[in-house]
Image (cartoon, rainbow, N blue to C red; front, side, top):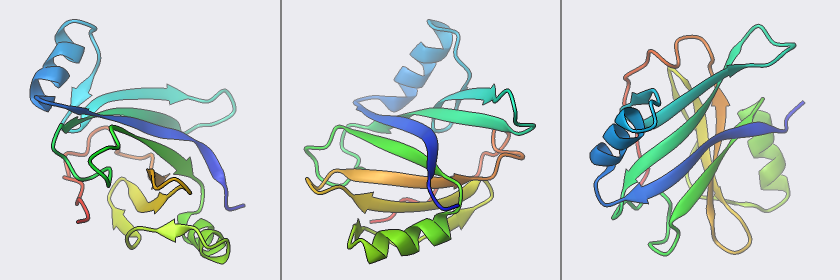
Length: 138
C-alpha cells in the first residue's frame, strides 16, 4: 500500500551545524553522522532496523525551501513511486523529481501553506554505515 508509515527525520537550521553535531554527541551522548544525529530502533514485529534523523543544517540552507521555513519534517513512505502518483492526482505541489540513493528514495512536496516536506522511502540495510552525501536539489 502506498502511504506514509512514520517520521523519517526532523531537520533544524543552525549557524554552525558541525558544532551542533559535536554538542549532541559530547553533551547528550547521541550517535552523530555527517547529517546530524541518527536514532535507530526496531519495531516489535519487524526484523528491519528503523532510523530517525535529527538533521543539522546551516542557517542559510535553502534545502527547506523558503528562508522563513526554519524546520522541515521528513515522512517515511513505504512506496514512494506509487505515493508520488497519488500526490499528483491530488494536485499536491511536487518541488523536485524523485531521487534514489543507496539509503533510499526522496521527493519534496509543499503543503497548502508552502511548507516544504521531505518524503523518504528508506533502504534499511546499510543506512547507518553510509557516508554517501545526499544531493540537495536547488
